[in-house]
Structures are given as C-alpha cells and as structure tokens.
Length: 451
Image (cartoon, rainbow, N blue to C red; front, side, top):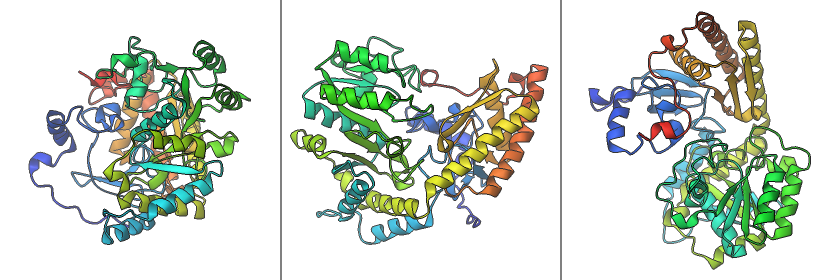
C-alpha cells in the first residue's frame, strides 16, 4: 500500500485535537455531526479521533497526524472498494475537469440507468438522488402516488424521513426493535400517526395481521431483503405474493446490502424481485449517489407527483457510480468482501474461545458484527475499541470489509484482537472492566445523545 502523503498543518492548535474540535462542533452543529453513526459517543466517548485529514486504502490519518488502519465501518459501509480508490477518483477528476453542473444534462445519468437495469433485469426505469434517506422518501412517495394509498408496512431501519418516524407517533417504542432504539418523532406531523406499521423480519404472521386489518389501505411494504439473519424458507416469497395480491408496492431497501454480496442487490441472490429497489452507500464508493429503480409500472408514478432537485443532476455522483460498478463487476469485489469478512468472523470466534470469552458473531460476511455474551457487554466493547485504538486500529464490534482489505491486514488485525481479548478476559476475571475505561462507555441507540 502506498504511504500517505505528509499532512497539512491544521490552522491553529485549537483544532489540532479531534476531540477538542468535536467539542466546538457540538456548539455549532446540532448533535455534533451529520450522521449518528459517526458520533464518537457511539464507539469511544472522549477519545475517538473523530476527524480525519486523509484516507486511502484502509489507512486513516487524524488531525494529529496519527495513522490508523480501519477495521471497523469503512465510511459506514460506503467504501466497498476502499478509501480514495484510484479508478473511481480518476473518473471523478475527469468529471470535474469537464464541468460538474450545466444547463444541459450529464449523459452519465442515462448510462448509469442503463447499467443498473442491466444488472437488475426486472427493473426498467431509474430515478436518482444523492443520499439513502432521501432515496427512501422518494420510493415511498412513488408508491403512494402509484396506489393512491397512505399506509406503509415496514420492517427494519430506513432513515430519518417523516414517513418512517411516523411509526413512533403516540407509541414511542415502535421502532425500538428495528436496529436503532429511541428515535424521537419530534417535528413529524401528528396527522401521519398510524400510517407507518412495523413488523419484524421473518414474521410473516405480523405482516399478515397488518394486511388483514388494513386491506386496501397499504401503499407499500418496505424492507431489507436480508440484513443479519437469512430469510426463513418461503418468507420473502410470501411477502412478494401478498404485496401483489393487495396491490401494494414492494420496496427493497438495498442501501446497506447493495454491492456487498454481489454486483447489485442481494435480492438477486435470494431469487425474489421487488417492484422498487433503493441503493446508496456502496453504489459510488463514498461519493454522494443514490438510485431508486423499479418496474416501468411502478416508476411511471413519479410523473404523477413532484420529485425534483438541482443537485440530483450534478455529474460527480454518476461518474463515481459508473466507475465503482464497473470495477466491482470486473474484479469480483463481492467475492473478496465475503472472503475477508469470513476470515475476520472466524478470527473473532477463535480468539474469543482461546481467551475464554463467550462471543457470538452474526450478519453477512460483508456486514459482520459480534457480541460478547456478558452482562458488562457495553463496557467490554468500549474497552475493546480503546485498546485497539492504542494499537493503531479503528475498531469496534462491527467490521465492513472493503476491496482494499488484504490477507496481511486481517492477520495483523487478528493478532491485535487476540491480545485485546486477553485483556478483556482479564478484566472480566477481576471484575474491573469499567475501571479500565479512560472515559464513559459507548452509547447505543439515539436517546442517549439527545440531551
């Protein structure tokens, strides 16, 4: 891997520390960051580096000039090829040189639409956005326009938009079983109460109960085709059948799972096609890009409502997505992600067993996470991140592999994990896990960051 270039000096000593800058950020930016998952409280409060000056491959340089290997989130799953991939960046630089905005349209958007439909033969039309949350809002809007209905049945986590947070109007814990507890619906119109109806993955009986109660009222069924656990036999097929039966639009949220197990959506491997699929994150290797693709019948409904934005036409996202997808397919990136992810999952399990820790890992190989089965799990994971940071790693209880992760990276990482698990086992034996933390334990969920 190429060595990162020398770092620019920060403009003042006040911003030389990521944590000091973060304290300033919390006075200037509500919540401190734009993305909940990037708040340092979520991993290592008071000590997470928080900001970077450079990122390339799997290496990240913080404001103090320290270099870390990222064996954690890799841009929250967006950078499937690795940071600053040279092929993608070359395409982006060419787009910049040729002008990223114009009165006319960039032809790349047609080329990208054509490529996405080639990868997903069931789809015939595509609309574009720049972020996953807004793309999901577009998809639900199209479904409501198509059906002229209001209610949405959903499972899983699908972002910040009103249509989704409406599930917590009058029932504060409705979303707690959907990956992120404590989401406050403040600012969501009360009139949306009862329009978002949750069910759990692999619980077709719950969805059927919603359908039976609201037959003829459901605009859409929204879900990830797979996240952690695999679908039970017949589950996705039953969801597909009931959506068709009641005339609801089946929307697969592939924002996280897309381009992690195959070139395109994971639903291609599962053999069940939706009416609409939504992509973001890995679609453009970290550049802002999102796509809503679907059948012609479903997507034409976009013409019966108003969905339009100037920056959805800028050229960079299209160029980055085209370069990402082409490389992803050419290099069989999905197979590499699976191989690296499985190596890490097996390594976690072996190291924990050797050190006497009870560890459970779950998730797709390319979206892996682990849980230490102990009453002090939260403190143990915080201590894990603390020790691994001292060893030069950005690490937590998740690992999202990229094409830039290689065998030697994994081997070195797992050596550090073994040493760290030994310390965790010692802390458990002595009962002093919390005392070994330099700061507070990591927060989980949204509610603890709202005060």
